[in-house]
Length: 134
Image (cartoon, rainbow, N blue to C red):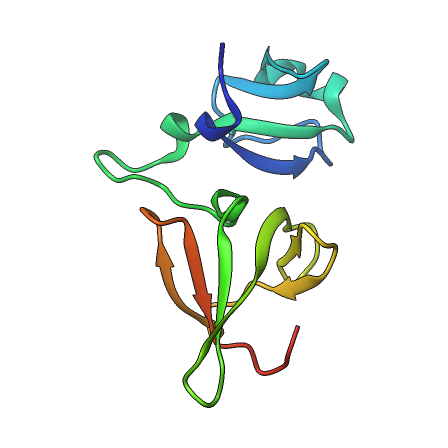
């Protein structure tokens, strides 16, 4: 059974003809990721489509996406040098021009490389320096 961690979301499918799709794409149905041949994309218009990380990553390189930050603890470095735990990322929305993280308490914050100080993948911590208080 394929898991969410093995996939990358492409978002809602907007066109039935996408030349660069791998042979198989996945759609979440009843809690399971169901594979479809990319020729069947016309039947999946409007649905969120996923592809296997293995199909899109470079040889020997581990791919990291904004979606991988779900579950990470956000720590903000304040102007006085103190660190404040802001919360845990519950969802990442890449459907708009600005990628947004929604914290478990519903607050939202932009995910922009100018604000990110460090991504600690082992501790699952995102250290940021936000220009505003959350």
